[in-house]
Image (cartoon, rainbow, N blue to C red; front, top):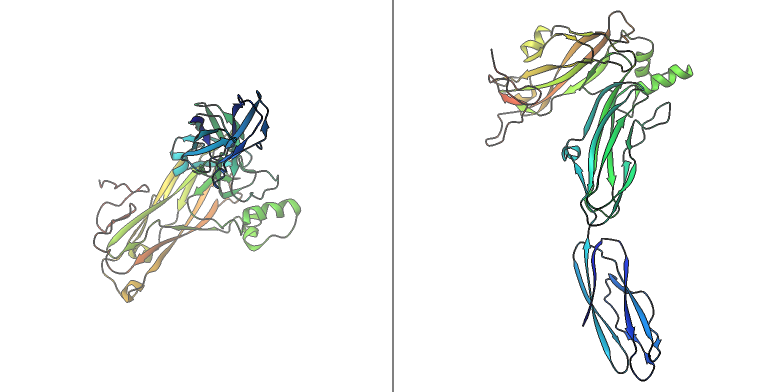
Length: 411
């Protein structure tokens, strides 16, 4: 028996090997071949024919693996007088591109807060860990972002390439938005033909036209985009919708934001969350210090368990700081909450605040006014025995957790 080993071949790729046969008999011989299996992994490329006395014929066989596994099949070539058996072997392997750091796929990249027209960059490395060259390309999966310049806010360089065995390349992701929006996000697919495991990198960033900003709370969703609508109306002189009108004509009217706690809590527990405020520094013109001022919570809100810290925060140029919000659920239920009747409900409180300073500063002397709706889901009864507390939740009376779920020490 003769062996024809195709070696490792990427899944979905077709290669051809050949075997040379010689007619050493005294007469011409008609060559025949047994049919190969129906899996279409191995295949005869050329048809069998008569081989003249003293002549030769090249038999071509293809191998196209369909999955990662070892393949073995026997091809029998025969004439009226003799037969040759050929063991066909091949290994299907999947293309594999390794992406580092691994956190790029689990956590993605947050490009932070930038001015319109300026850029922020992040990078990762791709390595070919296969014994053959690989081609790759960068594909963003999300819906193209609407903007006046008709260009995507995220792009990659290089956008495609080929790597030899063991070769690596650094890929730079660029976030360069052209319009103010606080909810840019997309998913980058590092595409490798026939690779079985998808390489997906979540990306997000925020863009501002004023020097001071708030990030973390939910702004109006993309399908109802007052930021884009305001820009179009400003450019075209057309009428804008109600949400965009607030951005265009009346900066003293507060922007409506929502901050929802990351996890629900039960009776007798306390939860924390946070949002960030900052003052941008432009690469072109620099920046200016800003300030956040939060109005004192009403007595009823404080009595209901709400607290915010700090309430006044200086914002140095290029810096970003966190504001922590805490809600302490009642230790005992009462008829004023749905938990008394065995139902869950969102407990809510509104923070009124203003951003001042920055470069450029808000158009109003009062600063950029914001109304932040705080929401946390309160469930009835105590937490079931054995159920772990979420990182942002503690038992009432214990040290509250910070924004990352770590307990703060009491002083």
